Image (cartoon, rainbow, N blue to C red):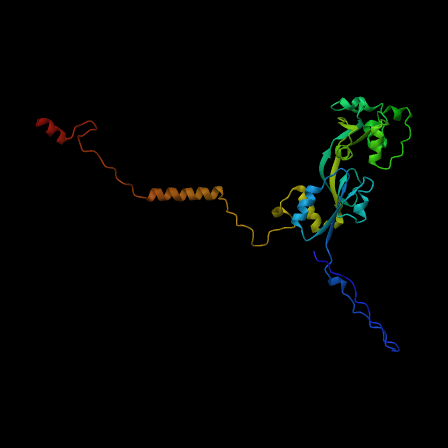
Length: 299
């Protein structure tokens, strides 16, 4: 895409000793300059938007777009302050002023050290984790919070300093505690010294597409169609031009079919019947012909 430069021509310097003021550059009408159209797509950690952004690039090559990752804490703010036109978020969020489309759910997993006794299990339930130290806010996993021993008896110790998920995984690998995460997030931060196992009785994590309701632009509609799997021909932003839509063959109604059948019957009744050829009188199917009798009698 060719971008238009907005640089102004520098003014000419006045001649020495001249009282003439410096020439001013002509005003620039920025309203009529073509500026690049951009579209910003945000996604929360664990979500992979590549399949959708690839289709977007194929369908809308004239629109520059950017893709960036957000945190759980920032996923809503990037929409409200306009940094993103659409965002792939992890629910729940404050939905006021936003429109959402639920996309899919993710199962939660517990991440433990490789030598943890649960590392050999195929899956676990919350009851298997009640004696563990959770390296995250208990409110993030209410099923564990309501059953955990360290929460009920008040023995829960402060969390160690952890600036990000990589440092949290370092604590897990060292055997300090466990974390319960959406499967995609655990996979994103996987290491050889930790293992993940599904937790069967905790709520799944929901992924949704969100955008500002007041800014449901044609570009937003196009991206919604891509995420929903609509083809270019069925996209709302690619409506068929008037007169270009193929003519559909009208199906005959039951009444029309009955009328056509009656016409065919009337035509058949009006057609004269063709007389059939009759056999000679006194001759039956097994009677010999006169010529055959003469041949027999002349022998």
